[in-house]
Length: 461
Image 1 (cartoon, one colour):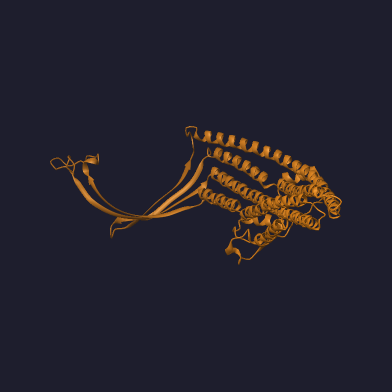
Image 2 (cartoon, rainbow, N blue to C red):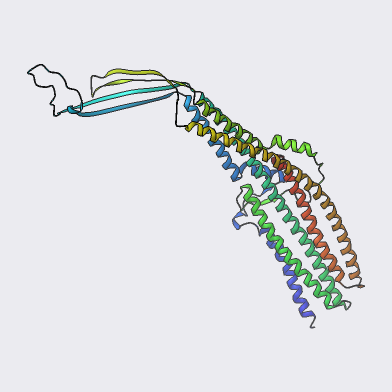
């Protein structure tokens, strides 16, 4: 009787431990108000392309590209007509002593104005006028427009590079979420095995062919697996939130991964190293952005040098002026102006030197990024080859560990051995399952790294 009481209590706790995760797990990772929302089903490629479209960093980069496009219009204004209108109503009084002119008078006649000064006015006038100006020749302005266009193209490539980076980040987050799902599945399988061993140990104890130590070992193993299961559920929730954040989706979105970690491809043909590097140097948007930035800075320097050349412009205005309410007469003013810069205190030379130094800086960054791209491609290919071998090795280890557990379990059930060998084998199987999940995740991460290094993260499948 002293054995049955604790055994019944342990059995009840075991049943609760099995039932609670079954009910809690489906709802543990979504708020209550999200139950009515439509689920989102995503593949690995879908996640990459969705992040490239609506990730916050991509949206911000898109707005920066729009700002660069707006600067083209600003630069173009230097060669466009400038038309304005004005209306001036003016009232004025004058002190005649400020004229500085002595008006001659006949001998014996009083002066026209008091030499000490006198107030004249007020004189009220109304002047309405249209103004027009147009640049006829400004080589520097055309150079600035060209530089702005090239800078806008560089900004567009920056947006593409940001989108590619967001796609790679989302793909990695997807793989981590799939890894968490796989780890949770492995821990559930471990838990099922531990529960089965505990059941057998109790049956043998009740039949008088087992010992209490076997039951204790089984309970200890089940407790350890339950702790791992709790951590796996927590990791699953964290990776889901990280993925939703990367995708720019509400955190209460019900997300379903259509690609499991085990179903993702692991037998793709690896590209030739030189071919992969060539594609990276040709396709990567960040490299093309630096090329455009280098060209834009050079064009800006050329535009500054062109400011030393003469500029030609035309101007004019036409309007009426006269006393308020009457005597309005038309007047106009026009002209053609030729301007030749002579000396500006070496300000222009300093600006040219600044742009030249900036161009050298961009060139250094461009060459360094090309080297970095080559390193990233080579590293990704090495990691892919290594991860593929690791996947094969860990899968073989899982098979052997499963055989070991099966053989040890048969001996335990037959009563020819205790369950110590079974627990040793189950621990080995636990580690093997973890390793194969990690190896599969490492392979997919390397595959994403290669796509990112080649500038094709959004093409991931």
